[in-house]
Length: 111
Length: 111
Image (cartoon, rainbow over all chains, first blue to last red; front, side, top):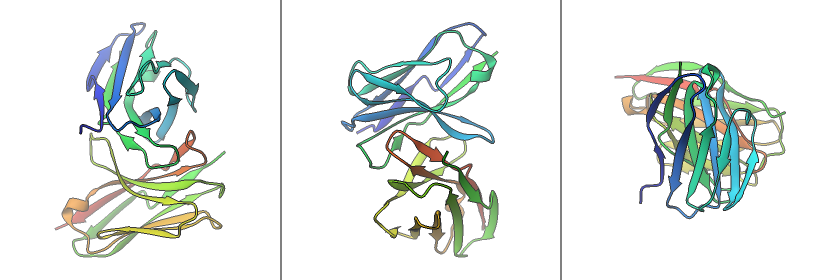
Protein backbone atom coordinates (compact mmCIF):
# COMPACT_ATOMS: atom_id res chain seq x y z
CA UNK A 1 0.00 0.00 0.00
CA UNK A 2 2.01 2.98 -1.30
CA UNK A 3 -0.51 5.69 -0.31
CA UNK A 4 0.00 8.83 -2.42
CA UNK A 5 2.95 8.92 -4.80
CA UNK A 6 4.23 11.75 -6.98
CA UNK A 7 6.54 11.83 -9.97
CA UNK A 8 8.98 13.35 -10.57
CA UNK A 9 10.57 14.32 -7.23
CA UNK A 10 12.63 17.15 -8.69
CA UNK A 11 12.53 19.09 -11.94
CA UNK A 12 14.23 22.13 -13.41
CA UNK A 13 12.53 23.92 -16.29
CA UNK A 14 13.36 26.90 -18.42
CA UNK A 15 10.80 29.69 -18.77
CA UNK A 16 8.22 28.76 -21.38
CA UNK A 17 8.72 25.00 -21.18
CA UNK A 18 5.88 22.67 -20.31
CA UNK A 19 5.63 19.69 -18.03
CA UNK A 20 3.18 17.36 -16.32
CA UNK A 21 3.28 16.23 -12.70
CA UNK A 22 1.70 12.87 -11.92
CA UNK A 23 -0.06 11.93 -8.71
CA UNK A 24 -1.29 8.43 -7.97
CA UNK A 25 -3.17 7.04 -4.98
CA UNK A 26 -4.09 3.47 -4.11
CA UNK A 27 -6.61 4.17 -1.33
CA UNK A 28 -9.67 4.37 -3.60
CA UNK A 29 -10.23 7.99 -2.54
CA UNK A 30 -12.84 10.02 -4.38
CA UNK A 31 -11.21 13.42 -3.83
CA UNK A 32 -7.80 14.50 -5.03
CA UNK A 33 -6.00 17.85 -4.71
CA UNK A 34 -2.97 19.76 -5.93
CA UNK A 35 -1.31 22.31 -3.61
CA UNK A 36 1.74 24.48 -3.84
CA UNK A 37 3.88 25.41 -0.85
CA UNK A 38 5.91 28.61 -0.82
CA UNK A 39 7.96 30.12 2.00
CA UNK A 40 5.85 32.48 4.07
CA UNK A 41 2.67 31.62 2.12
CA UNK A 42 1.80 28.21 3.50
CA UNK A 43 0.03 25.65 1.33
CA UNK A 44 -2.46 26.90 -1.23
CA UNK A 45 -4.91 24.85 -3.26
CA UNK A 46 -4.38 24.96 -7.03
CA UNK A 47 -7.04 22.57 -8.38
CA UNK A 48 -9.04 19.68 -7.03
CA UNK A 49 -11.20 16.82 -8.21
CA UNK A 50 -14.21 15.22 -6.55
CA UNK A 51 -14.30 12.23 -8.87
CA UNK A 52 -13.12 10.68 -12.11
CA UNK A 53 -13.64 13.06 -15.01
CA UNK A 54 -14.31 16.12 -12.83
CA UNK A 55 -11.98 18.97 -11.90
CA UNK A 56 -12.39 22.42 -10.40
CA UNK A 57 -10.32 25.50 -9.58
CA UNK A 58 -8.89 26.19 -6.18
CA UNK A 59 -7.37 29.32 -4.71
CA UNK A 60 -4.48 29.79 -7.18
CA UNK A 61 -5.37 28.05 -10.49
CA UNK A 62 -3.86 30.45 -13.03
CA UNK A 63 -1.13 28.95 -15.22
CA UNK A 64 -2.09 25.34 -14.39
CA UNK A 65 -4.37 22.72 -15.88
CA UNK A 66 -5.42 19.34 -14.49
CA UNK A 67 -7.00 16.12 -15.62
CA UNK A 68 -8.49 13.13 -13.81
CA UNK A 69 -9.04 10.45 -16.42
CA UNK A 70 -8.73 7.63 -13.91
CA UNK A 71 -9.88 7.60 -10.29
CA UNK A 72 -6.42 6.81 -8.99
CA UNK A 73 -4.51 9.45 -10.99
CA UNK A 74 -4.52 13.25 -10.95
CA UNK A 75 -2.28 15.14 -13.37
CA UNK A 76 -1.09 18.74 -13.02
CA UNK A 77 0.14 20.49 -16.15
CA UNK A 78 2.14 23.64 -16.68
CA UNK A 79 1.75 24.74 -20.31
CA UNK A 80 4.27 27.60 -20.25
CA UNK A 81 6.32 27.65 -17.06
CA UNK A 82 7.17 30.95 -15.37
CA UNK A 83 9.67 31.68 -12.56
CA UNK A 84 6.71 32.47 -10.28
CA UNK A 85 5.79 28.79 -10.49
CA UNK A 86 8.99 27.77 -8.72
CA UNK A 87 7.60 25.96 -5.70
CA UNK A 88 7.09 22.64 -4.00
CA UNK A 89 3.97 20.89 -5.29
CA UNK A 90 2.00 18.47 -3.17
CA UNK A 91 -0.77 16.12 -4.14
CA UNK A 92 -3.31 14.83 -1.63
CA UNK A 93 -6.33 12.56 -1.58
CA UNK A 94 -9.22 11.85 0.76
CA UNK A 95 -12.69 10.50 1.25
CA UNK A 96 -15.25 13.32 1.44
CA UNK A 97 -14.94 15.21 4.75
CA UNK A 98 -12.21 12.96 6.04
CA UNK A 99 -8.50 13.46 6.54
CA UNK A 100 -6.31 14.27 3.59
CA UNK A 101 -3.25 12.17 2.87
CA UNK A 102 -0.30 13.83 1.18
CA UNK A 103 2.36 12.70 -1.23
CA UNK A 104 6.09 13.42 -0.76
CA UNK A 105 6.10 16.47 -3.04
CA UNK A 106 7.76 17.63 -6.25
CA UNK A 107 10.34 20.38 -6.07
CA UNK A 108 10.12 22.49 -9.23
CA UNK A 109 12.52 25.23 -10.24
CA UNK A 110 11.78 27.46 -13.24
CA UNK A 111 14.77 29.41 -14.51
CA UNK B 1 -12.17 34.50 3.61
CA UNK B 2 -10.84 31.98 6.10
CA UNK B 3 -7.58 33.04 7.74
CA UNK B 4 -5.57 30.56 9.77
CA UNK B 5 -2.91 31.75 12.20
CA UNK B 6 -0.41 29.68 14.14
CA UNK B 7 1.43 31.00 17.15
CA UNK B 8 4.27 30.82 17.91
CA UNK B 9 6.07 30.63 14.56
CA UNK B 10 8.97 28.84 16.23
CA UNK B 11 9.45 27.11 19.56
CA UNK B 12 12.47 25.55 21.22
CA UNK B 13 12.10 23.39 24.33
CA UNK B 14 14.25 20.94 26.29
CA UNK B 15 13.46 17.27 26.02
CA UNK B 16 10.74 16.06 28.36
CA UNK B 17 8.69 19.23 28.45
CA UNK B 18 4.98 19.30 27.76
CA UNK B 19 4.07 21.92 25.19
CA UNK B 20 1.09 23.51 23.45
CA UNK B 21 0.86 24.74 19.88
CA UNK B 22 -1.91 27.15 18.97
CA UNK B 23 -4.04 27.56 15.89
CA UNK B 24 -6.75 30.17 15.36
CA UNK B 25 -9.17 30.66 12.48
CA UNK B 26 -11.52 33.46 11.56
CA UNK B 27 -14.56 31.59 10.21
CA UNK B 28 -16.14 29.14 12.65
CA UNK B 29 -18.26 27.45 9.94
CA UNK B 30 -15.87 24.54 9.46
CA UNK B 31 -16.35 20.83 8.81
CA UNK B 32 -13.15 19.69 10.42
CA UNK B 33 -9.64 20.68 11.47
CA UNK B 34 -6.54 18.64 10.77
CA UNK B 35 -3.07 18.77 12.36
CA UNK B 36 -0.06 17.75 10.29
CA UNK B 37 3.62 17.25 10.85
CA UNK B 38 6.16 18.18 8.18
CA UNK B 39 9.81 17.23 8.35
CA UNK B 40 12.32 19.29 6.32
CA UNK B 41 12.11 18.49 2.61
CA UNK B 42 9.29 16.01 3.17
CA UNK B 43 5.56 15.80 2.70
CA UNK B 44 2.85 16.26 5.30
CA UNK B 45 1.98 13.51 7.74
CA UNK B 46 -1.52 13.59 9.19
CA UNK B 47 -1.51 13.57 12.99
CA UNK B 48 -5.08 14.18 14.09
CA UNK B 49 -8.41 15.07 12.52
CA UNK B 50 -11.14 16.69 14.59
CA UNK B 51 -14.62 16.81 13.10
CA UNK B 52 -16.66 19.94 13.82
CA UNK B 53 -18.91 18.01 16.23
CA UNK B 54 -15.95 16.85 18.32
CA UNK B 55 -14.07 18.66 21.09
CA UNK B 56 -10.82 16.72 21.08
CA UNK B 57 -8.87 13.82 19.66
CA UNK B 58 -5.97 11.88 21.14
CA UNK B 59 -3.22 9.79 19.62
CA UNK B 60 -0.44 8.60 21.87
CA UNK B 61 1.32 11.63 23.35
CA UNK B 62 -0.70 14.02 21.18
CA UNK B 63 -3.97 15.64 22.11
CA UNK B 64 -5.78 18.14 19.92
CA UNK B 65 -8.72 20.24 21.05
CA UNK B 66 -11.21 22.29 19.07
CA UNK B 67 -13.31 25.24 20.19
CA UNK B 68 -15.29 26.22 17.11
CA UNK B 69 -17.11 29.12 18.70
CA UNK B 70 -13.88 30.90 19.60
CA UNK B 71 -12.07 29.80 16.44
CA UNK B 72 -9.26 28.01 18.24
CA UNK B 73 -7.49 24.69 18.31
CA UNK B 74 -4.53 23.53 20.37
CA UNK B 75 -2.13 20.65 19.88
CA UNK B 76 -0.71 19.36 23.14
CA UNK B 77 2.46 17.27 23.02
CA UNK B 78 3.33 15.44 26.22
CA UNK B 79 6.86 14.53 27.27
CA UNK B 80 8.49 15.95 24.14
CA UNK B 81 11.34 14.07 22.46
CA UNK B 82 14.03 15.17 19.96
CA UNK B 83 12.20 13.10 17.34
CA UNK B 84 9.24 15.47 17.68
CA UNK B 85 11.29 18.24 16.07
CA UNK B 86 9.44 19.27 12.91
CA UNK B 87 7.04 21.89 11.60
CA UNK B 88 3.46 21.47 12.75
CA UNK B 89 0.67 22.72 10.50
CA UNK B 90 -3.00 23.11 11.20
CA UNK B 91 -5.59 23.25 8.44
CA UNK B 92 -9.29 24.01 8.58
CA UNK B 93 -11.83 22.65 6.14
CA UNK B 94 -14.88 24.76 5.31
CA UNK B 95 -15.90 22.11 2.86
CA UNK B 96 -13.76 19.40 1.41
CA UNK B 97 -12.64 21.60 -1.42
CA UNK B 98 -11.51 24.58 0.61
CA UNK B 99 -8.85 23.56 3.13
CA UNK B 100 -6.88 26.52 4.45
CA UNK B 101 -3.51 26.08 6.11
CA UNK B 102 -1.64 28.02 8.74
CA UNK B 103 2.00 28.91 8.15
CA UNK B 104 3.11 26.41 10.79
CA UNK B 105 5.04 26.28 14.05
CA UNK B 106 8.64 25.09 13.78
CA UNK B 107 9.38 22.99 16.86
CA UNK B 108 12.86 22.10 18.10
CA UNK B 109 13.24 19.71 21.01
CA UNK B 110 16.75 19.79 22.45
CA UNK B 111 18.27 16.65 23.99
